[in-house]
Image (cartoon, rainbow, N blue to C red; front, top):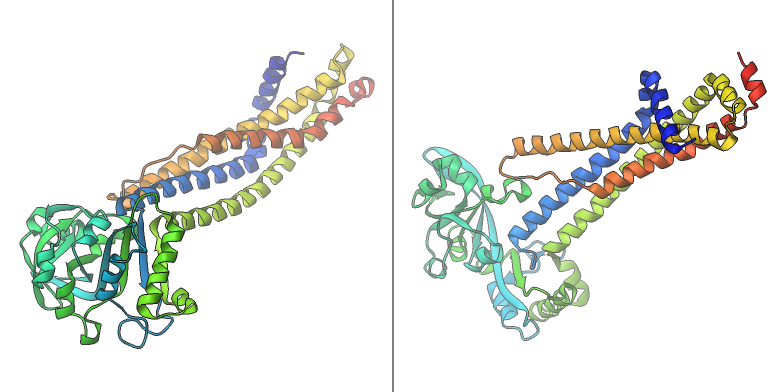
Length: 414
């Protein structure tokens, strides 16, 4: 019998018992659907993270004291001063260092027209904006003159500007108070959604102004975060080691102390960490889905055994008119494979639909994020292949049992 005839016969048998066929496929549908959903959502999240890291700049090293040698900034722990940053910038060991920025952070309350917003006030210099690819949508960023003159000026994010002033343009040149100190808004930055509205909750003032207005006297001249931009193509591991060598020299730290004193991470490594977590999640879900597929496969085998029993007379008749064991075996194998493949296709459709709606819901909840749906054809092909393989494996026993039936005994079966 030709293969296409086997396929048509298999499809006809499935339509005769639609309800039973659907229930039989349920384990396959759930297993395949779960894998497709997790893989698709994972790829969506990865692409989103890549786009956000790219906006901030991937060739950036973030360094912050851990506090393990004691609290930071004047309480007996490791202290990084602006003079240390200048020495790093001038170091002959770091020719691939392109830009450097020290930050000093303080928590504060921003007030305008009776409204109050809790903010993180970061003291920065001009280089902080270029290193992070921060783009003003209105006004300007901080300048060297602002730092030299200890100007009371501030740059805020679009989210905060729209909340307090209705638009970014309206915010420029408005006067606000931060911890009761008056500041003029000179610029509004384009919000970047990474970190749940990070820029919307952060304001930037000249580093020198933060020292004067907000920092305790022992913290003046210190920084809590260092951002270093290095040349594209730089060996990151080598660059980190050279930074450590210089920090050890400048801060008089031992090998053991330098490793515990600072947390260092290049932004591209954040993606590696995310990938590791994502692979772990996908492996776990795939294992659970694998159990579902095995259960579904057992269900397929059981229903195929029932089908063999129900069609015993039909098998006997086919053998009596010339069908051989191979033909009967092929027929039941194809039925099992088609059953699981259809279940796999339904699972793929369900997984894609759920992941699409997950993206839609995310965009409704966070319209500024601009998350895009990602189609992963390799996962779909693999899923369908796995579904077919499950049908082949669990359809073998019923198919062999059907092919070994004696035509005489089969025709006598009641």
